Figure 1 (tube, rainbow, N blue to C red):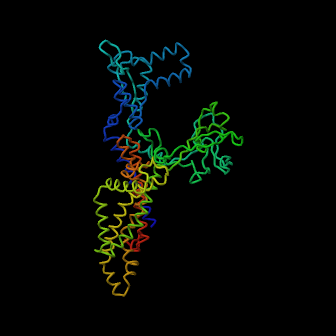
Figure 2: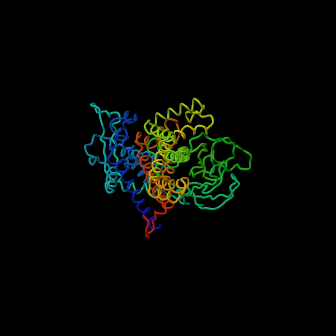
Figure 3: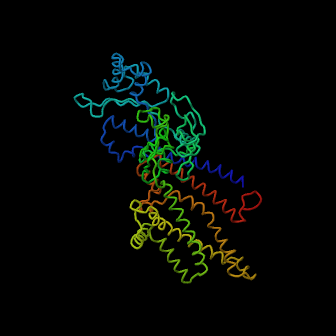
Length: 533
């Protein structure tokens, strides 16, 4: 068993790496990167060099490349040479303006024709780093006036390779907070210690120098104990949720309303001074600036709390609907399939086959609308999530709609496997030995028929985390079913890679758990070297 698990996990890691490489090559190399500007109004409004710079800026955000602009390089140089207040000196300011305008002084055919020391330094430095130098000459009207968006620009571009992108992606999949996370040189007292938390009246593990102040803490929200030590990441969104971490800011973000409370700020605990806000002070992160507004409200520079939002997360909504639908499907599908096999070719079997044919033949969108109409008309159930006055009722229709095809599938396969087992030689032998039909069905046929379904149980549970595109779209469920299709539509490269990796990981785990469950259920299956198969 240990050898099997080791080999499976090892091959799974290689498979996951291969999938990440393939999807990154597809997204970043084989698809024309200019496709991201197809529906971009801001791109359409720009022209000449401004449009080109806009493209490079977007490509950098989408993780295609890194670039350094001459303007930023020049500003850094002058601050390093003459200090932050270099602009206060007229002579130095004039020198800066001359260096800045040198690339735009004339229409140069070649960037090396520009006679300026700072331009030469820029070219030398980034050519030594193997960057591509991109010079956009000044664009003029016929009269010599600079055209709209035609100001000359000079940048150094570094195209990211698949291996660098893969390394960066893997490096942020699991991160740990340390006392060296905060780069503020003014923060000298760095520690991790256990203190008494006056907000929860419970002990808490807090840090100074860590990104979050509260590393382990208790509060009144499920699961009641929370941590900020280990973080799992799949990158950041490029477009839809621009800049948001995909795990915490997209999949794991609550979808309800802000929860406002009358509560005291950390520095005001015990004073009775309360403010009505939705802040969760256990989530405060470090800020190098301590403003007058924050003085008297916070005890230190940890002054950036996130908001407290109610409701389940996107992945939580999808999982709740999916897991309930799966449980309902197994509760009804397996017994009905067994009963159909027992009553083969009789009325019950024919009715069951009618349902199976209907649920398989009719498009899912059609029967979803049929059953949603019945639910809203006869039982007054809410149709859309946003319109539900009682939130829990909003889960009923999507759950039923998701369970119906699964029930039909389990009925079909259980009936088929039961009938196959009924014609086996061991059944004839059991009858000859005098066993009752009840014993044969309950102890032998049904158990052997389940062997074919056991392997798929972990997958049925884990894939509840992936959501259901059509069901969630029809009922307006704020889940993750549409997350991949939306990412493709909006060219959200980071989200496409993250969701693909997430689905692949679930598939791998489902296969391993399915094998282990099958070995536990079927004594003929063994992963040891001694026999088995």
